[in-house]
Amino acid sequence: MKKTLNHVQAFMKMEASAGLVLMGVAVFAVIAANTALSPIYEGFLSTYITVGVGSFEIAKPALLWINDGLMAIFFFLVGLEIKREVLAGELSSFDKALLPVLAAIGGMLVPGLVFFAINAGTPENLNGWAIPTATDIAFALGILALLGSRVPVTLKIFLLAIAIIDDLGAIIIIAVFYTSELSTNALTLSMLGFALAAALNRMGVRKAAPYVLIGIFMWVCVLKSGVHATLAGVLIALTIPMKAPDHEKTLLHRMEKGLHYWVAFLILPIFAFANAGVSLQNVALADLLQPLPLGIAAGLFIGKQLGVLGFTWIGVKSGLAKLPMGVEWRHVYGVACLTGVGFTMSLFIGSLAFGADETMNAVRLGVISGSILSGTLGFAVLRTASPRSASVSTAAE
Image (cartoon, rainbow, N blue to C red):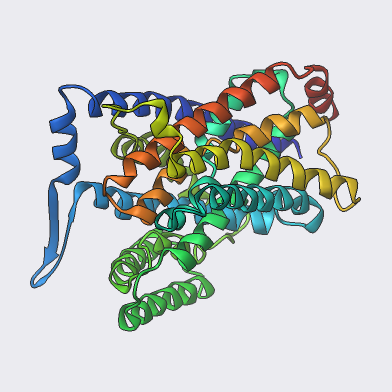
């Protein structure tokens, strides 16, 4: 157990730093979008980049290369984390997984309902119902890390488990609700690639290169199929071997460790810079009260609190689960608030729901305001929590 906690603490430390970097990049993106840098910023995002071999080519603006390409690597890492947690981590048994699963389900269901209630009269906005269901793990853990030893390690593990399940939910939502018309030929080719990678796993292939090459092939096929290309990253991650000879690190462990720094300190900051540039020109309070941004902000700030806290309470009071050691209800409420920090994941889903049109400014306004409110309240709640329970939890371990 001590080894597991050391691994989690090291992960939290890196995620905390990554969260602070994301905050800085987000602020810079807003500055770039609202100053004399705006033409350069918009020009960079709209610059077309073409990659091709012979007559086959893919041409996209830089923004879509970031959202479809770089984010596929992020989702590959998410897939690795999900596989590890399900097979050998905090989600590997019913007892461990039940409470964070219930909390995550509430944290996805209630925000979506809040958004729907506010936007029921504006059907053109309803495609954005999933935007407030997401949680930004780097931001949430970054805020939690600012509290230091005031919060128990078990609370950090609880938040991490919720965020991973939340990511799995986001993957399912993207696959089911944000898929355009399907090309069965391209999709079939991608599934053949998946089958080949799975066969390599069964044959004991432990080198990264074959899986990377198949992953690139699958990404191109999924991109052409109509399913969002980032899902190729998740699929290939599920084929990465998690077995190795004694005293050797598994390929999954090596790839996960090697990618974390690149994703945390390069890929996610680039995504945040490209997508957080909300224009504040001629923005008034009334704009935030429009159904779309209000639904997103309320879903993140109110829906996440009600969903995570409510479903956790139901799970504990019904006897199905129990709170982690050293965790009090004030801690749970603080974590419920922090799950409302949607930021990168919410912006990503928003880009799938509305594309790159003028609606995205309203999406950014809702995501940023809801995330700021959630993060601020979550920090304040946990800051007032008794440090006694944290020390008790640490001592017990």
